[in-house]
Image (cartoon, rainbow, N blue to C red):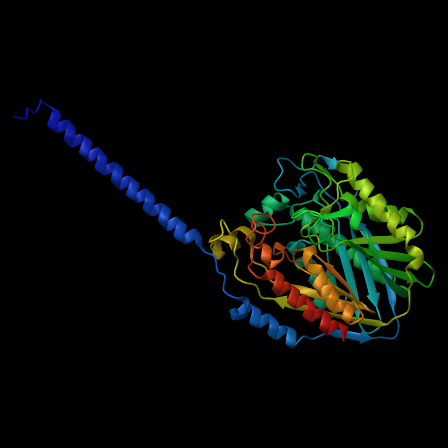
Length: 465
């Protein structure tokens, strides 16, 4: 016989009611999570590149590539630099969002421009002491330079890639994380400095000769992903411009990441690239020097026993000594050949991965990062072929394209940060490696190592003919 105590039935009923409510809440919670997951996440897409529309479109563009310029009546070259003015609200761009604006300026930051003109075609080569060439700045500069006679194909952007310089030049959540709060005054300051620098460079242009040199600076660089046994791009590449009045300038590229100054130091600095060009200008040998970031992906400076500014100063000093010691073998010659082009790049839809098989949906990526139209520049000056990429282009990818250029008797110079930014482009075999460059910062893969390499090779072949 079961005896039911007074109130026990009511208590059981209440417990059952509470349990039902908890189950309903749990079901609703799981349902909301499921809806969010479906809305925000999707599976990665590893469709073979040959079967994709974006690959076919770009290959078609390459086959119909329009190249401007050719031989002219001579060659004139000029150069100029303009200081980038910061303000009290300027945050530093590099290593992620910082708590406070920059505390002070350790060393000045500049925009530097070179203008070359053969009477038929003129080009502006522009670099800046910033993390990247900011797309919002470039959007303003291109129309302004267009009024001066420079088409998009004849404007060649880059940056030094210092991780300790002015930010505030990007919008959206990801832009804030990368470069601090958007600062319209900084955007205008950088854009204004670029336009003024190009104008002054064009005014200063005079008859000139050019030369190219490649120096092995491998002892100062290493592969930061896989160590010294992995592929590196050890070369310091130099274009010399020598005016008839014996004034001369050098335009440099090198692949070591300018990450010598730590995030804890909140002062603005151009890092070793700025110190390097200052050393060369102060030497009295060159009246002007400019640094364009090379294939900096996967490359970092070799440890030299120093930290922060002393480390940067030592790298700059070593590279400057290498350049100055080797200057006697850097010969210049006359040429009037300038050719240029710009090819839009169609990309795979965004694939910012959370794991090997899960990525955020493209609309989420575009909300975070903003949508861009990007492309590649190609510029030929004499026997030099310059290729500007919209990314941190990996130094591990350089060698194969360099061989293509060498077979044509051309000197290849690949630079990063041409006014767009699509993250890191690394060799495809490392796409699934759990490293920052190959996962968190590899946004449009897979197969972009091959894809970008094929576009570069196609541009080299087109420009080299």
